[in-house]
Image (cartoon, rainbow, N blue to C red; front, side):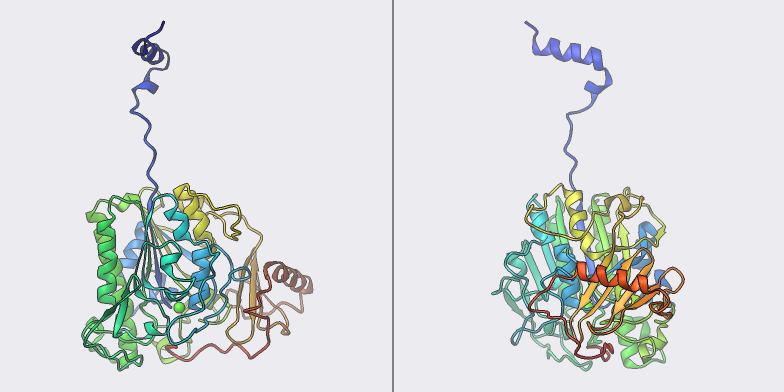
Length: 466
Ligand SMILES: [Ca+2]
């Protein structure tokens, strides 16, 4: 009879170095941080060409990782864009396809059968937190972040509440935390003792510190630089010959940058750099038009894209996309390959080994090979819709892009390869592409009685800061 020792010895003799390896370790899945900045435009950041606003920490993050020029948000306003990120669905399938106020505080909630990226990661042992702004359902509704996979919440639940950076209260989980000395004024004149980003940024650092042994998922849904354009300290912009609004906006972006820097420094300090995937993006395009006073000063036309927040032209949809994970994501890469928010959930599934339940339908594809230096997955199309005024739709396949600004409007066709500014509508020259776009839109759009297709008004964008 062979003894265990003899067996190991003979195995060792046969396979030599194989048995010299230590017992196989299960690789630990990475920590995942998604920094989602509210209304941050590509053109706000130095690494995308901004000259006047200082963003040294985010620029450094881009140098250490991959900077994407074609990261697409869910759609071009807050709540539906975030829902797409959380659910892995494009807005033809997502249950939230517009910003919808519900009652005095809160927005239309995610429904009970939602399956979020937080639920996915929690299912394999991640600690999860949403810190900043939620906007997809108050705590008593089915859309509460605490019912949808987040162990911890801190910040604003309601989008409208988040218009003030000196709010009278924030939420710690579902409990109100009063902020004495704040006026809660949503106008630019708002004042107070506690700038909301101070406790919010502290909370992100505390969450990382307390979960350093990981794995953790932090959805850092930072409200900066969304309007109202309020800041506690104009810093290096104080003496610039600019309007108060211009100084405040620049200072808000630089404040966002400083807090990203503090978070990156903490990851380094805790030795978590190589264990943590960090993605930074905006939730929709710039909140102001290139021809506005902010747009002119900060040259938001420099990227050549048409449109901004609330439109489905590229300026409303392409966001900053900076991906950092030392040792895995190649440093210094700039990529034009497109990917979209609905890819985040399946990407997290592949990274964590978590299983997406068979009953959950998603539209995204894992971009893990792209993170590691390869290409984005091949796909048939990207699709967006939005129901703020008219029901508007857009679809991209290859380098072709189609926009329809209302169900009875004609389809516009653009060649993104040669016309990123979407200036030349080719629909009359290429009717076969308009037909193709129409069939793709019809295939991607599932009817939802909450968001009937309607021709209400032209999409004109929104006033500053709204
Ligand atoms: Ca937004």
